[in-house]
Length: 323
Image (cartoon, one colour):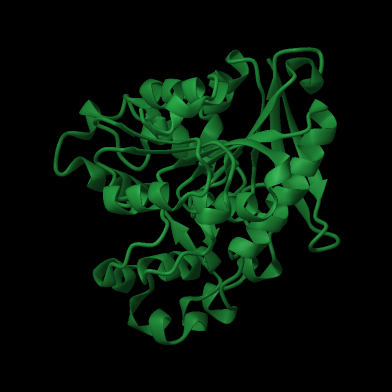
């Protein structure tokens, strides 16, 4: 299995580049005959989809795809602005959804050329459902099928909104600062919150947390992850009941899928997104005993297989419904 980290020039910001990981099984990505792009969430870069032992990219390659994962500018191995080298309070939040959509467009153009395909299947996770949803709503001709995994769409929740941006950020977005940092202890606490006090070992295999977080820090100068804060403003809009994109404009076959214990991508919001989609071919699925980080948990194989069935299966009128 060949793995290459490409660096795509940004058409939106000359001089900046987007890291795009490519994995395929043949002599070239074009040999697969189909391609899929994975879009990361609010905090962690595209390597999230390529953690050894639970790599969604590797699973997609085994399914016959040329598989890709990007880092939005400001994340991972993509261009980081100078503001990330100084104290976060010295600059305003950046890397909102519109910038991510521009990066998705540049990467899909590169994938179509390298894989020699007309359309690319797309899988978005968490905030990545906002960005790829926004892309799909405005550029339908380049997407084959769309998967919105652990989506955050529009679900008014004042308490979560307050916890997300705080009183200062709600009144003055610039007060949030340019970026935030996350330690492994903070990441573990965030992940374990979905388990409702249960032993994390029941949900997550030994060593996964450490292996994953080490990979997330591979492009960092210290053992913390730095993430742009523009996403907090996007999420704040969703938690105030305002969608960032028109789901009704998405006419591609779409799967909405979440883990049943996910406290971030709640069921009511995911079903609201499903109902708002414009296409006739749409499906909804839940994976039992899975949280927001389901792609790294013991139940990840069930998620991968559910998505694989949707991506490779035939479409007819009976497909419009729940799995």
